[in-house]
Image (cartoon, rainbow, N blue to C red; front, side, top):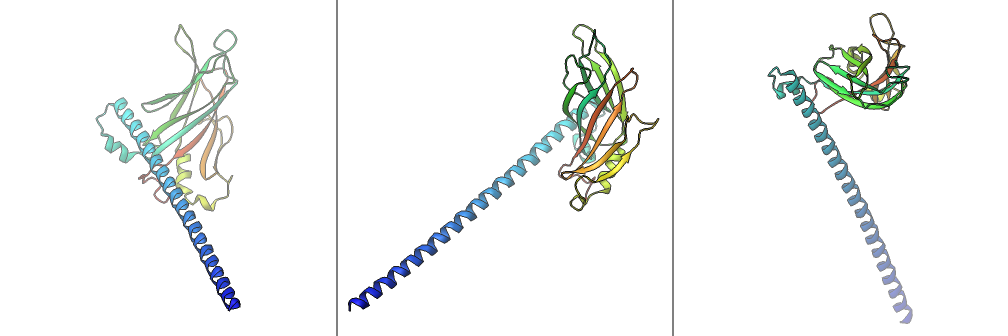
Length: 248
């Protein structure tokens, strides 16, 4: 009888342990599922917030553009014709002209149509590092972009330190042509633009893929001045609802 009782107790204990282990496993799996769901919800909320911020930024750019144009075109109409946003990363100036006693206080102004943006000013440096991002709204890629360098003066009008123009049509063409970015190896050169008498390029300009983005590097030779170059990089910002690159 003692043996039977002991066997029964052992069986009961084993069953209880197995049941407890199963329950712990289920609880563990449920906790993982809850964490995964929570993380998914957080990522979704971040995506929604980013989408809203992007739309708000585009709307503010378009409203500003409408006011500057003063042509009575509605914001809705402009939003419909908006292709996207062009981020111009103004990197640096090289061997810029001297406009003060021994140096200059340069900054860059970028204009496209009625849009006008500028970088910060760098004091006493003819090889300034700006590393500023300027964002333009693009409705017509055939409108040239003009870049002008100025020397900041405190008591007199700012002096010009040269200018250059460039177009984004080749860059837009590359964006339209290469929509299957996941199939293109990182670092692939998609297009090359050569300097000539009809552009302001100081050297070959590459349009290439980097980290899932199509970028273009340009070194612009400044005109109407004795010397100077400006290095910039172009990056396209897609926005929800744009039909310009519908296959992306």
